[in-house]
Length: 359
Image: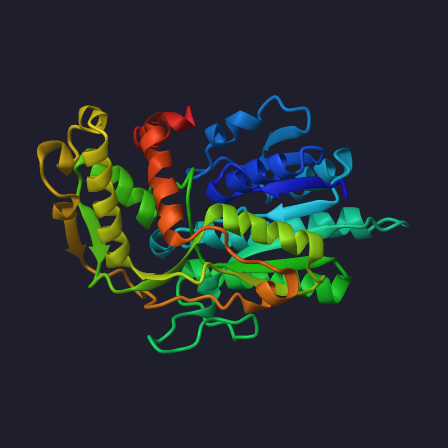
């Protein structure tokens, strides 16, 4: 089946990875990348796709309903994959308004445009609206509690997760009220290439390479379920191809790690990389192993953030059972690929750190 996709948030971390994944797997499909290019949107993430006959980038905001509707008509879009979101919990605590504007109002704008174009005419368009959500809408788990399932009641604890929960409910409402053909996926923490260096894994990598401290909230024992970003993209692909309209699917890595254990692993891997490649010391002279020290010396425990959820864990048995989804990467293979990517793409993250990526 040939599709014509509109991917929102396409210049962000997961959206960009999805565009690369889909273009490689479905080269005949039309791919329209849509992004407002806020601080975490980086057009360089899509540079390798620019110029392809089947790819187009549109710089615009999902809150512009008329723009979205016009683009759906102009490009004869039949599939929306909606990644666009403000997603950093710390930022949502400091400034929740942007999260309500993008995640709630923006999602509603997108739904209105889709309903108008796909369902508003005499001959409704065969379509799919796929909404990408998060495990954080389910709240926090105790250490011995079972993992989140799709039927668990929502209990968001941050402005970010509350805004995502609201957007999930809007998508559900547009399906049940208007008949919009939707699917939703709730994923665990992603990591991999093009990961904006404010999140734990990329932040630790770039800080180590610059000899900067590795700030760990509280006691570092907060647990997250980690998923390599390409496995997430493959899960969405399966939902689009075989998922049941109106259903929600959890996409997880079956891979729980405490934050401090991830940081210790990254420290060990960077130490190992420097020992194996003498050129790294010259490239990154401020990194501890360049001076014969261990990266773990940079670890610094800091005051815990407000309302910090203790544990997330995804039960992905539904998507495994119904769609045949199994992650291809273990955390050990995925984290090495991620470190290798950041070592090989220093100009990319340097441009983010100095702000030149926004020029």
